Amino acid sequence: MSRNRDLPKRLGCLLARHQAVHDPEREPRNHLRWLPEVRRWQARRLEASFDRFLRDPTRRPAAQFFLSDVYNDRDFSRRDADIARVLPTMQRLLPATLLETLSNAIELGLLTHAFDLRLAHVLEAMPSRRRRLDAPLYAQAYREAGLPRLRSHQIDLIAHVGTGLAGALRMPGVAMLLKLSRGPAKAAGLGELQGFLERGFSAFARLGNAREFIGEIEADERELSRRLFAGDPDPFAGRIG
Image (cartoon, rainbow, N blue to C red; front, side, top):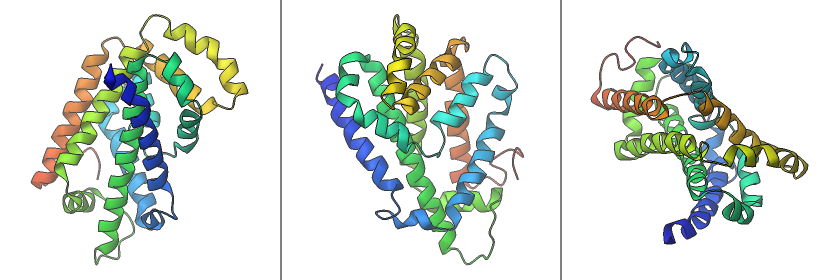
């Protein structure tokens, strides 16, 4: 019970940290010239890693949702602002599991961006005059950025968000709640949050075995991280150059 009462506090703290780490005035590394390239390259890497899911009609919607809304460094500031505005109401209306999943999603976004800033800083400090990433340069920067335990926690969060969202959105009444809240959410300017929840529900509704899907993603990401830290000469198994 105390854990459920602590969720709004955790969510509020994460929102504040998430906003701070994305603010160029408070976090100058947001201005690093390597940051957009890190984001671009990692988006390509994720698409390559998800290729088999994207080619599977049953798994494609969930994979696309992961790429666009979960494991992504896009700007979620509007979604986060929505959550901050309705936090007291969310505590009363949403299942605790969904509230926890939203917290994990925000923490994942926070951690992903923090790692991107760290990678960009490492690349900025390298003597190379290159402007584009490739697999060997990314692998070198990944190792130099370090923090393997925190990388492992990032993968934990990917799994928690996936399984939590799949489970929460299949709870009785959630589909009707989302349908009924569409109009009020739009009128209240909460479109980003509503869209996130609806896209997640739609994606996972067609997935089938969500636990198996999430398990494969988690296993792939852990193996990739292990190979990167171990200095494997081809950590991406030729999927991206």
